[in-house]
Amino acid sequence: MIAFTLSIIPTAQARARHGVVKGRSMTFKSGAQRANEQTLDALLAPHAPASPLDGGVVLEFRAVFPPPKSASKKARAAMLRGIESHTKKPDLDNLTKQLKDAMTRLQFWHDDRQVVRLACEKRYGETGRWEVCIREMMEGETI
Image 1 (cartoon, rainbow, N blue to C red):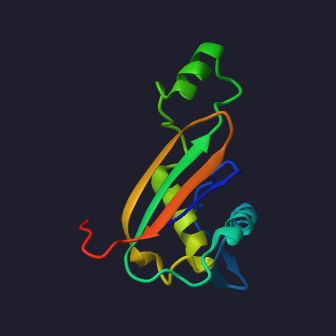
Image 2: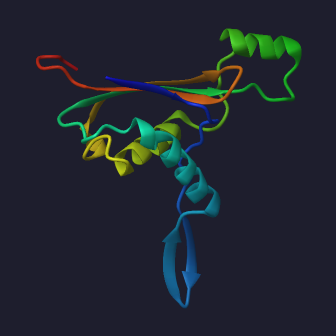
């Protein structure tokens, strides 16, 4: 099992951008997306296993966001106690994509199709962070 916390406000996978260069349609990542990926890769790298995990992988993570500065004291307290859910952007599926793509680039596993169980949530907390746990499926463990 590999478990760790990354002290950074989670970011979501951004949509690819499209444009025309010299009459040809091009698809590219925005500068902000590239910067987010580089930062996430740098924070994840020390936690990467010596060799990629084989077989089915269980990925669990929590994306924690600080309450907005505009929140009242009462609203902030409700957010931090978990009474008010994080229903704002980014979407949970885009957060998942960002984390899985980064972990694939860093060879946590051979391919993200190996992730056979996913448990994830987003919530509020004092500081922004990713809380991540990955493990290989145990022999005989059912999904």
